[in-house]
Length: 254
Image 1 (cartoon, rainbow, N blue to C red):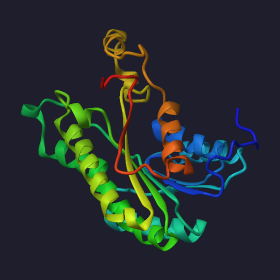
Image 2: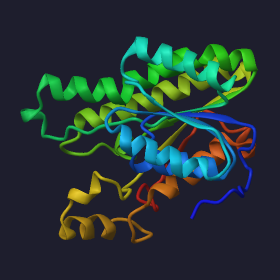
Image 3: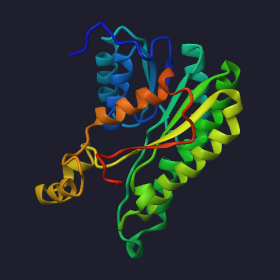
């Protein structure tokens, strides 16, 4: 249960996390609060769910504000960065976590299936990175963490749109790392494997078993596994780490 004591790996830092009201995003918000970060996070659907996350996170004695904002919208992303900078004074860490799937085989995939996934998963990363760079440059430091996927590295049948969007994030992040490294701004990718979220709840027990059998650690990941990796990349423990893809997948990529 949350309490007012935090371990402090992120004390004094301000983090902006997209898609923070559920799944992996929620786990990141709560872990960052536990580590002492002040947090802004975005959500799109449920005000009630978002406020529930805020109530839980503030128990750690940090400042937390939820913003209803669509990261795939360029103007909304610009306003979000301005609003967060005004409310918190700075942004040390940006975690581009918002993402969706629209899985189907290529022969059945519609243009809408493709565009929606690209907009939410990839364009949102461009939008927020573009607008956060100015305040980070002014601050002379920053850590940008983009949520990829092992599917973006290996591909997966029925997920051409999702795989392309996540592979795009890797190329984008490596380029940003080279562009802004001289300004003391780092950019990395976390590539989760099979993580227990709302998306995996729809799997049958048989499907889950097949996935688990393919993972060397013989279990699905949980949101906190990804959140811990985010703490590492957002904290001063990783000040010489940039342009990297950190797989959090139980050895699935071996």
